Length: 285
Image (cartoon, rainbow, N blue to C red; front, side, top):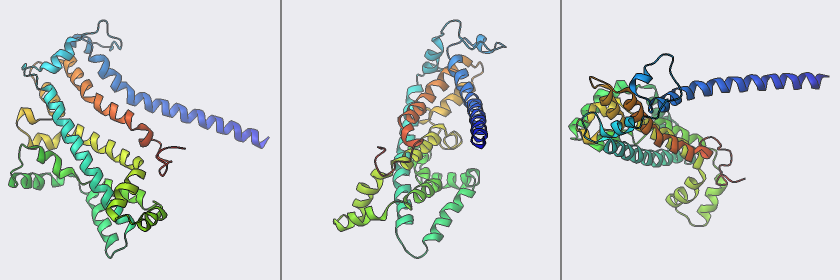
């Protein structure tokens, strides 16, 4: 009898959890469905209440307008390429710098190690808006205004990334490192040949979060980039929306295209991003 009550309670709990997860999933998916659906509708249909979730006809002109732009400059693909270059280079740099810093903080004993970690983590308490002006002045004094360097270099190091890698690597088996040292491997060789290949889950997590942040970044590029050919995709969408007569369908099409790279990246790294339990076996059972 007690087992039966426990089983019923467990089943009800599972049902409630599933209902809660479904509600959250709907809340996340509805805006995406609206965006992709609206991207195939004329502007008049998008503004209709209630919203017709299934397009009457697939209006491909929205995507042509998104690529062409309101001024006919066809700069959309160039802005996507700019976003990809900035996000990719920043992600690669962040992964390397955060992982090697986290490795040094996790596996080497030296005076002041904890103080350094505390100082790095303390920067997470400072909002970006508080350092935006001095950072902008620094970029201007270095002559990096309106360059890719202004978009990439200030974000190559992440306090969260250091903390993530340090917390993972502190549990990394010392036996693997000692075995590599006995075999004559250098510390740099150990880092690249032993540590990194067995740190795929946190690296994938850091890659997705960093790439997404840079891909969606708007405020900082808005400050430092003026040349249209150097602007990123969020700036293109903002400029698209600032036109006197905004084409909502083309705007949704531009947003839909801009979201595709992030969806692809997440799907490619899902098995590492979500399931990170088999960390020392390359993801194999």
